[in-house]
Image (tube, rainbow, N blue to C red; front, side, top):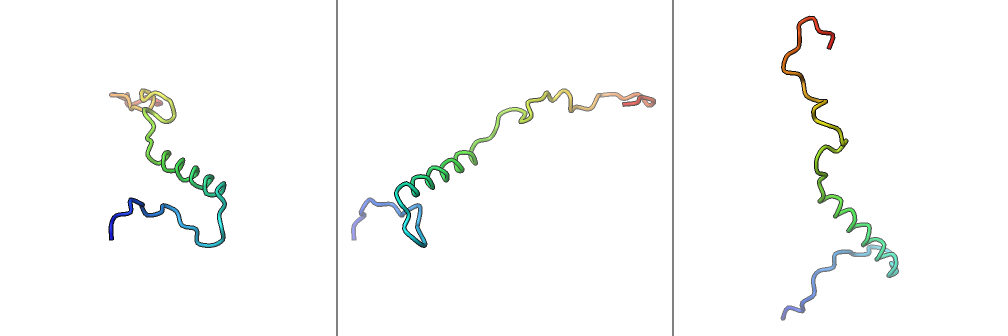
Length: 65
């Protein structure tokens, strides 16, 4: 048999009959989740400076810090 050019379905309805609107809504949600999973935030997620989280190079023995 030849290649029909059709890919395997990405979704399969197990029970009931989904309307076109329901399938469209489900597709939008799944694609949004997939897009969010691939993105990595750039920089510090809290927006703060790394300067505040660093330990000082020297701490005096009687320092309160």
